Image (cartoon, rainbow, N blue to C red; front, side, top):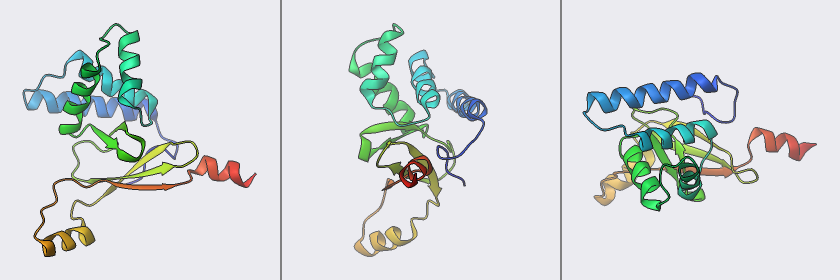
Length: 160
C-alpha cells in the first residue's frame, strides 16, 4: 500500500472514508462513537499529521468540549484500541490511521526537519522480528516501525 502524507491524494475522500469506517465499526460492535471521540478523529484527519494530546486538547477546549487532559487521552485510547489512531513514539504524538481495520503493522516515515509523518503498511507477519521472538519464546503483541529521514518537500528544499 502507498504511504499517505508525502503524496497528493483526495484529502476529503480520505477523511470521509476513515470516518465512515469508524462509524460502521462502532455500530457493528455496539460501541459508542461519542461526539468527543468523533471530533478527536476528525481533528487528526483534518491535520493529516501527528499531533500531541495537548494540541488536540487545546482544539477541544476552544470548541467547548472539555479542558481536562483525560478528555483527550480517553478518546485517543479508545481510537487506538480500535485501530483508528496510532501513537508515533518518536514525536510523542498521534496520527489517524491511514488504513483502518486492515491487518497491518504501521511503519512511520518521519521527516527530521518538518516532522511530517507518512504511514505505510507492513504485513502483520513481522518476518524477521517474528522469527527472533519465536526463537526467544516471546510473543509479540504490538509492533511499530519508525524511520527518520527527509520528506520529498524537505529534500527538494535542501537541494535548492
